[in-house]
Amino acid sequence: MANYYYSKNPDVVHDQQEWNFTLRGQAMTFVTDNGVFSKRTVDFGTRTLLDTFSFTDLPVGPLLDVGAGYGPIGLTLAKEQPQRQVDLVDVNELALSLARENATRNQITNVKIFSSDQYAAVTGQYAAILTNPPIRAGKSVVHGILSGAHAHLVPNGVLTVVIQKKQGAPSAQQKMEEVFGNVAVLAKNKGYFILQSRRLAN
Ligand SMILES: C[S@@+](CC[C@H](N)C(=O)[O-])C[C@H]1O[C@@H](n2cnc3c(N)ncnc32)[C@H](O)[C@@H]1O
Image 1: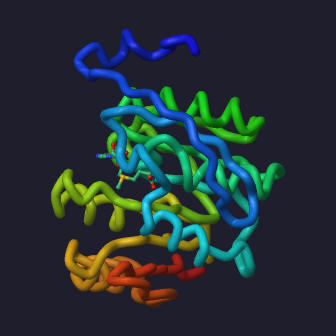
Image 2 (image 1 turned 180 degrees about the vertical axis):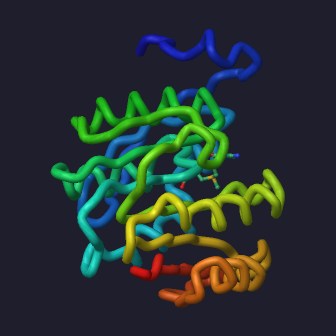
C-alpha cells in the first residue's frame, strides 16, 4: 500500500495495520497506525457509544464527530445514513489521513474530514455531535469540547459523549447539565458512561 501520509508525520515509526470490525451491523474496514488512539481494535467506549446512539428523534441536519481519530464513529454513522453529511475533525494529521483513507475503503462519500482544534475550524450547526473525547489532552480540552457543542447544535440537536467514570464522567455530567440544562445517562457499561444532552428549542 502507498505510504500516502508519511510526509505529514515524519517522527512516527509506522506500523500500519488493516482489520475488519462490525459496527451497528455494518462490516467496516479500518487502516490504523502507530500514533493514533486504539490502533489495534475499536475502543470499547467507542463501541458502547455506537451501540447506544439512536437516530430516533434526531432533527434534520449533519453530524459531527469531534476527535474522530481514524474515524470509527463518524464513518460508521455516515455509512448507515448516506443521505446525511457527517463531518469528522481532529488535530492529529495522521489520524485525519487515516480517516480519509478509511472513508475511501468503505465507499463513504458523504463526509468532510478536516483539521480542527475543538471547534476552531467548525462552522455551521449539527443535528448531533458525538465524541470520545481526548482525556490525555486534559480536562480543559474535554470540557471545552462539551461546552462548545451547544453553539454548534441545531435546536433539539444532541451531544452524545462516552467517558469512563474514573476518567471524569461525574464532572463531565455536571458540565453538560450546567451548559445544556439537561443530561441523561443513556448507558453504563464496565465503567463507561454514555452521556447525552439536548439543545433545548428555546
Ligand atoms: C479518545 S480518542 C478517540 C478517537 C476516535 N474517535 C475513536 O473513537 O477511536 C480522542 C481523539 O481526539 C483528538 N484530539 C486531541 N485533542 C483535540 C482537540 N483539541 N481537538 C480535536 N480533537 C482532539 C485526538 O487526536 C484523538 O484522535
